[in-house]
Length: 285
Image (cartoon, rainbow, N blue to C red; front, side):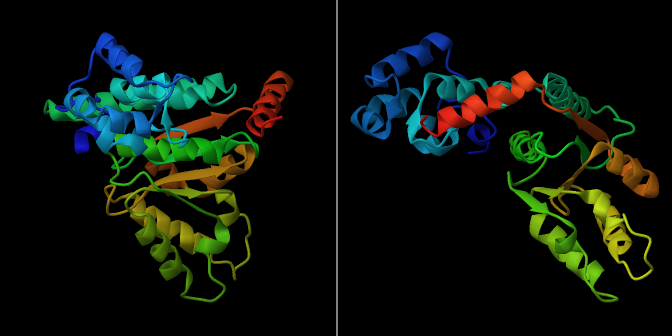
């Protein structure tokens, strides 16, 4: 149901199990390697369905790393809810501490605005959808964070799908007059339930040629940005910092529609070494 989908907790009613209850269940089900397998859940199905039916019904959602086993961390994160899930995802990213702080701040502000709206307060200055800019060098994890962001927006109910659709200029811009608007609109329609990630977005307007239709694509995107999520996707515009500054200056209408900017700083030599170590370790060396 919606409650488990949004990480409201692991028990039958959506009420979280206490840490002791969860640990007791984990101790009962874990194998010699300290993991819960499907076989163990089947063996103790009656107990699991009574204490934590989500383990049966939402196994794939709890299994974050998709290895068909549940670790203690995965179970704890699922039972804890979205804040714990987000920390688990951010822990998997090397470095980028300032960026992680920006993501946490974004999550808190969206949840706070929602609480205030639910209490009947007017929330001023908020765009209809939380469109974003991701700016930084290539290889700093913009697409990876885009996927996390798409899942986060889905978990907190902003979007109806966790899907991230990634596009660049060729997917949006056509070669002939009158074709770019419909081409861009078709992409928007296909992505409207989730997040549209526009990589190297500055390439849409980086040429002054009169025969270039990139600006028509931008105008089509801007029109869709006024819609509520569901009618149009939440959009992430990504690219180099300097190029993105120029892109935004050239399109003031975009600037007014984008409420959040995330900065991806370059990795330090130590962080690059850590990434290499994780990559090599993941390959079994």
